Each structure stands twice: as C-alpha cells, then as structure tokens.
Length: 125
Image (tube, rainbow, N blue to C red):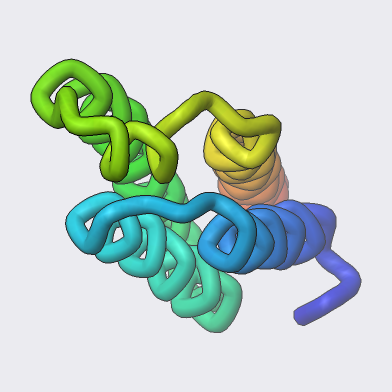
C-alpha cells in the first residue's frame, strides 16, 4: 500500500541503502549487514496487514544499521594497511546508513501510530 506514509519511509530507507552499497566501498561483512537491512526494509513494505511484525522488522533494521556502524569503526581500527584504509576512509556515503536509520525510525513511529488508531477505532465500536 503505497499511500501509507510508512511505506514511503521504508522505500526511502531501501533506496538510500542501495545508494550506499554502490558508493561506499566496504568490506563484505559491512556489505552483508547493509544488504540484509535493505532486504528487511523491502520485505517490511509487504507486511502491511501485520503492523506489529512490521514495527519489529523496522526495529531490527535499525539494529542492523547500528551494527554496520560498529563494524565500520572496528574495521577502521583493525585494518592498518594503507590499501584497506583507502576503502574505509570516511566518505559522505558513510552518513547514508544513518539517514536510512532515521527513515526506518520514522516508519516504525508511523506504524505504531496506525496500530493505535486501529485500536481506538475498535474501541469505539
């Protein structure tokens, strides 16, 4: 359901993750975590019938993006050779997972608001 605002937020988070995958030169564990977050965001769009599960997947996507930043810092500190550090230097693309995290947070907030609205409508009946 594209007309829901959380769907637009999830599409934005997925697009930003794709852009980051193509721009940010990262090692395979970081790409794997970012790709998994991308797949979860896309899958979450189609869970519009189950809002509680949709909110949980948004939270899981946020946690994966936090793990991406942890991996980014760990890889920066572990790899000291110059050939690897040229792939891990802070680019503007390193900010993109944070933007994706914000979109996932906004989507989760909108999903929870929808769930509360449905509960309130059920109470009125």
